[in-house]
Every structure is written in C-alpha cells, then in structure tokens.
Image 1 (cartoon, one colour):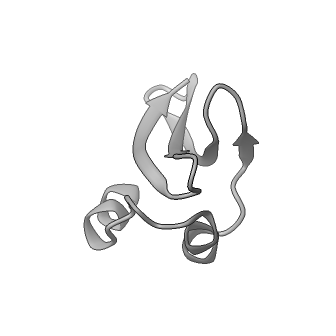
Image 2 (cartoon, rainbow, N blue to C red):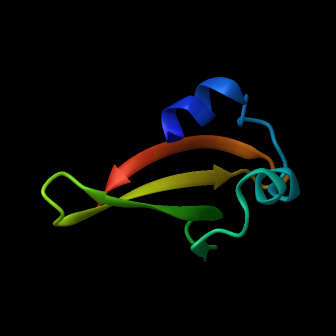
Length: 71
C-alpha cells in the first residue's frame, strides 16, 4: 500500500501541511537531529518489528527524502 502511495504521489518537495493533508497526522514528530514525521505502517516480518514510513524535511519545511524502516 505505501509503495503505491510513493509511486502515485511525488512526495519530495511537498510541504509539511501538504503531507498532513495527504496522510493525516503522523504517529510521531521528531525535531532532532533533523525534522521528521514517522507514520506507523504495522508489523513487519514475523511480527517482531514495526514497519515505519519516515519522512525527512529540510529547513524550509519541504520533504527532502523518505524511507521505510523496520524497527
């Protein structure tokens, strides 16, 4: 599902407000060392780790990059 979203929308360059309009409020906001929004995607693999969509913003409040992690 998240892979379809990334393919359909060009997320890089979107503002924080545009991201929230598209995805809703993030599960977690992090300000240090860089501003990032974290969205919980569910359990990964054998149900031990969480899948997370991490969105990293630049100093202008625009999305710089994104990644999916399994923490």
